[in-house]
Length: 481
Ligand code: SAM
Ligand code: SF4
Image 1 (tube, protein in one colour):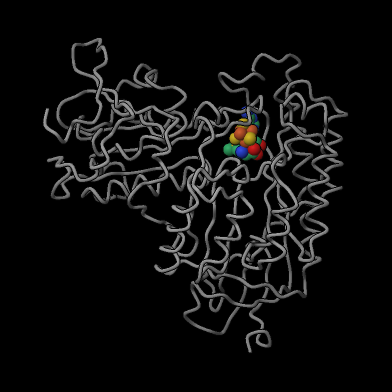
Image 2 (cartoon, helix red, strand yellow):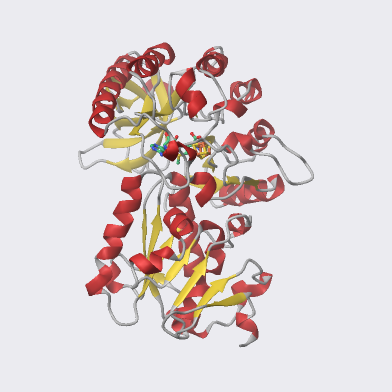
């Protein structure tokens, strides 16, 4: 094996005599330049489909960046691709099932020489079992191993039948050389990987491994580069983004990092998601107050309004403690939009517990809520809990909750009528003179403007009407002066 493949490959037992390989963590730092014949000359094509959250979307940007840098080109359909990759989500059972049904399509349709790969959380969770369930899959790779993808694919091209990359406790995933960014206006940046929180229903600690923060110097360098290349909006990502702990010499806490990012020249908006209530303190609200560049929006998942259920979920806060965090934000000089995540039908959730979640919606007045039926997941402590809520009852509770939240959002959005918001223009609608974009509160706003060429510009628009998920308005000529 030549130097190019001196990347810590370990042979696995292969049931059919063909070699299978597993990538170990010790990839040499110069592997990005290794002469992998198959990739030279841009011979390869890849198709990449992403399921799940923003972190997965951003991971896919990194995967695409890594492959493009190695001579691959991205194609729009699986049919046209040499390598078909699915970046998967396993947070709820349905999401994981969707991946396997997509993979099932290739049982008979896979073309000779096509590589089918499973990336992300399902890969990490199911590991080599995927080869049993879908023997036509030849590559299984978790999020911490994406830099090694070109080498892994080259191994398959060289005749190896199956390969896995399943380490999940390295911080290599942060440092991909090139990220191909899908959104021309908002750049995503992972600052913390994994999760140490151990909520009793959640697979993330198993699929994404322990918490690892990226050094602030490296984050700030990337932000400066993004600003130089024309991005003015940055979104910092992490499963618990505010648990950030700088491993570098500056030892920044999350609020310090927010300020440092906000101070980078050319950056006009900074967002962050997702915050965990336990680590959400006044220092973050103070930073938002002092730096208008930090957006007027916090996503603070509560999961349940009942302290008993929160305890069973191992969320590490009570309803009252959560409400104290909300009070910190409500006391800020600048109004902050607050959104959340809620799970209904957790084992043991009584009518009374559910009523407490409904009353919490009223008490907080959320501007948005993602709500889910509890889904039992492998390896999680809640799997063994008694008093499961029947599926039908979960659906009933979810419908009630969504209806209530819709009414709250309608009222809150209607209260914004007459106000002017700055909109970063993301797109043009089919209707003449109609544009859309996001406000600092992260609300979608559709507005009319007589101007042309305002894509990517910041525009002042006055709200004239509203529905639960969208504001409507028109560009404000006075504010433009
Ligand atoms: N780290 C974030 C936090 O602590 O809130 C959220 C991560 S998770 C990708 C996004 C949301 O999925 C969670 O906030 C939770 O509401 C939901 N979720 C996670 N596990 C779930 C499960 N087993 N069943 C239903 N919803 C779940
Ligand atoms: Fe999952 Fe809880 Fe970690 Fe969020 S904080 S990723 S819900 S374990």
